Image (tube, rainbow, N blue to C red; front, top):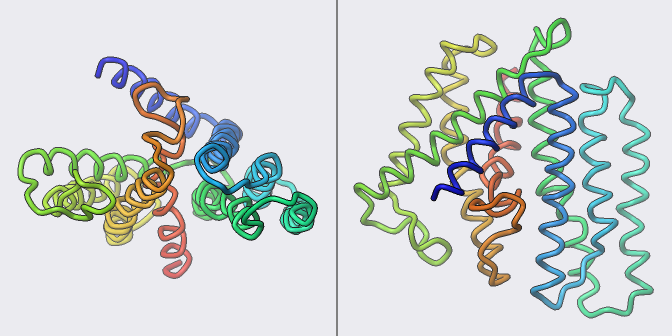
Length: 272
């Protein structure tokens, strides 16, 4: 528990500092997460199944996809070049698979491409959404991303505490035997409460949008946890990696963000 607490504290400090300090520090940290997270996903498949995804090209495509989404906002570079490179990388995978003579060729292709959607896209969309607020061009601000963190963490904390205290009815026993409906509801209430607090601290959005984002993160952040548990259970592994002692890997730490981020982005696009 001590190791987990120390690792978690260091992680939170680094994440918040890089998010607040400068757009390039956030960009560099997220790019690192995308590359390592893609490696974790593809490496688990290589080691624990008959599937043999293209690990180098899968990681490369994820990194380029992230650059394609964020290059204009962070680097002030046109995304067209990165999109062209990404297209070449994507369609190179089935062509290379022709010559590999491995089992499950189409599973190999699908899993080689999946990190682009599952890992690169959520991190990229969070930066993209944050850059769309009016005050971003004049002065860098990461209010949306910081609010996203705090709501997501409060949902996890509330779910854990409520589940420990009141949990009786299993939420999704087939995937995660310890999760309960009582824990999920408790996490949702705390997430909405923190959303209201975020609307007071950060003025980038009206209170009703923060509350809706709190509901979205509560629902889909919890489902992201279940999706990651489903993946690990199917691969018979406990953690996605060992980069964070006591916490596992990047995919373990960001499982809620990976599913919730696209839904938050879609909501903000639709209402703004």
